[in-house]
Length: 178
View (cartoon, rainbow, N blue to C red):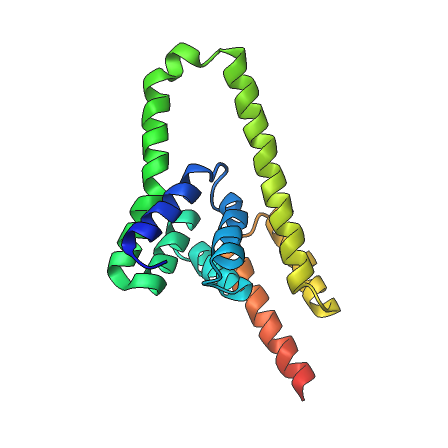
């Protein structure tokens, strides 16, 4: 990505197809930034995404801002953020203008049902990919199962689960290092 326009266009494209929130954007980011453009490694992308998830605000916007900043400083952060937000802003405005007329249209309902299923597939793809690349030991698998239980069963805050998982991994890493 040579200039701010490239950042803006890239994140407009990603923002246009990120139905379902920040989790759904990870496969698009991986495809564009890791596979096609090769400007980030998969590990760097996951680290940036984790930071975007832990900071206050919308995951997709935080991630876009951070990537833009890494590529082109403050101006890159602004270009990426505007690129990520603009498609959603335009789509939501358009939907708000016409929703009353088409809210009960069966074709619209079918389209949204298809979008929801597609988003589930994107998220499942990310989970499988992350599992294959990061769960390489029984310790990591155990941390995953406990984190999943804390989130899914006990409804813990994702921020605290990430902090506790990081601490557990540090402790386990230090224990087995010696």
